[in-house]
Length: 114
Image (cartoon, rainbow, N blue to C red; front, side):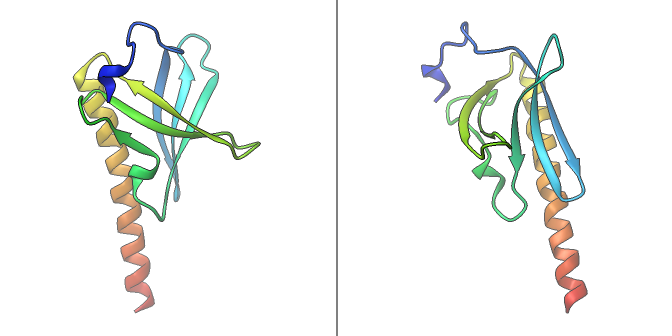
């Protein structure tokens, strides 16, 4: 629930990028000023995207991400909020597009095997 978050005191201001290369997808959080990677949330290929990114139940502008450190394999959950509803909608759409592309790829592979 986003209503329990202190939205005036955030950990870091970031630029959010949803990337997709081949079958790999990720949500990258980059420092707004330096562009340095702050955290990365890999998007799953063989599991529901909700295992990596999930909207909160009380707002359309806030999400919880499962970020993973590549070096150690450790993960943490971070809250992500957008000031503008349009930006949150664009983010949600980009994640859904990645998920739909993976679904189409799996379906194409399945049909080739038949």
